[in-house]
Image (tube, rainbow, N blue to C red; front, side, top):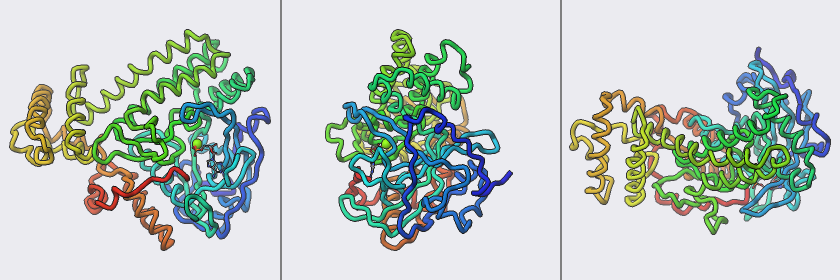
Length: 491
Ligand code: AMP
Ligand code: MG
């Protein structure tokens, strides 16, 4: 049944946890807030129709001027390892959870405001988010969803006239985001390092009850099963990031979702030309979170979570789950990469073909996304039909050798090229959120208060595998000026 903002069914389970798990707070409204973008696909998750954005109180509800009926705003407390070092207390410093809504399918969705003003966990921060970073998170979370990668979702952006100071004065904005849960690895670490063992069990049982229905709440092995599932989901998520060419940029344990979602978008980036050492976060001088480090970092982060769970689960059990990570990751990754190559029945020996191609892309600085999309047109019958690919390579002899191996794999599987092309186009996106595309949407919003480019990108990126010939220009290589874009990590 369609809802409106006044009749959302709130069930605020997090606020039933002990009071030291969160702080009750009130959002602080931004000056002259106005709706910049609204995402009907995310609204549907709350059973809200498109017209919801026309509700005369829409902006007031999400700017914290009015409380949605049933909302009990809180900021949650957590900790985490940031760049390898434990920080004993973090928490929602600028995000406020308005509450949890149950939709008509029985799904639970946190409604969170990001940029809603100071909380007890703001430390030195102002509790605000700038329009630039809000647009990036809004677009990327929906782009990831469109790509089939688990992610928090984004309902709306409010722009404002309020100045927020970063490296330069910018405009403050509010992101309304949704996720089944925002609990992080760091939520568990907080209680472990404080020696609050009982709280670790309370949080684990809470998360199991709300989000892991396949685990029986009275199963004596429930905590072990829970951790094992987090390992599995994280391995799958990492394979998806690597296969699509996504770099998160700040994989601290406070940004790692316990549900295996992509969470907390900061200085993220998608690969343009294939460079495994790509660092999207310019403050990450050591390259801790470089693109090719992500699976190892996730494994390391899972070890931090495992440590926080030692009061609940025997060490050997935790270790055996952790040991599964590399092979789980490798098998998901091989499956995804072979399907990008149109290989129907992947075998371990196909890993060589994948790695040889990645080497080739790297040494010839070939655009990752475009190459895979174009590869659908590869002819398994005649080499001359592949000159459109071959001509992109400097080292053509190396390409010819790879193409020969690829052709022989394809010929063995006996699938018509046209059918393989269709299957490949379902897994190789034509459209990704390249930095320069986000930058154009940001500049027009910042300079002209014109938000139409945000909506256009949202629309295109929600269907990244569709041809959308009218939007061909959005699938192009980055223009020369794009090489000068520096993604600021101050968001
Ligand atoms: P992040 O790296 O953006 O995930 O943020 C790390 C921590 O810093 C989290 O606890 C955030 O809530 C907090 N934080 C980041 N920016 C701000 C800000 N402007 N004001 C208050 N807290 C912030
Ligand atoms: Mg964060």
